[in-house]
Length: 270
Image (cartoon, rainbow, N blue to C red; front, side):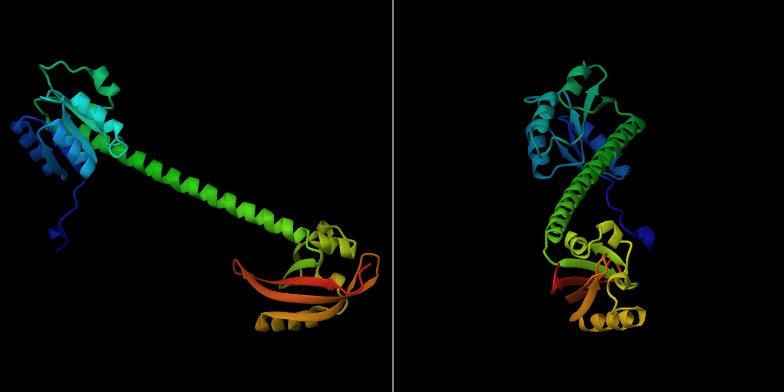
């Protein structure tokens, strides 16, 4: 059943040649190889066709009346819509192929007449592979640039949040389930007489004599169930003074972890 399923074409190729026999021969070869082929007999039609529906690759005869292949290629490369389409020139063995000019106007390769099926397949497949890799690289670069911009925005927002929290007049503590401080602002250290580094190595038990493990667990569950809570307690400073405090606590979940965010107003600050 799967063997009867129609396979999508490997690529869409535009063949441009003013000789009908050449068009038929190339079309037959490439169709047999699994490509979708469009055929045109002059440069003007080729330009219109490529603009209307850009192909993955163009096989372009050099010697054509009215507009030769070099001019067609130049005009393709001058258009934003078609400039990235790889162009392989077609030239007869008895014709003068100006290879320097062919590459200068934007061609990527050339095929000589009479056609060799092996040569046609190799050059077409190689250049399509290069084009696919270029597109993948471009897409990855676009994604990378977007990721960089998103990261810069996130870092800017984080710095702004940090700036705001550090200048907030009340103490801010982020506390985990084990009562350990995972974030404190500058006011927290200033009000208690500790450095931020010291506080980040301490726990609720070190600054609040009213909370030891059993009461902390009960308090955690209450905040978790209610979402937020306001309580009064006492904080002990580094020099052993006791300060009455009002604590507003919010329950947070971040990256699969649970936290309390506590904003503390000191009722009788030093």
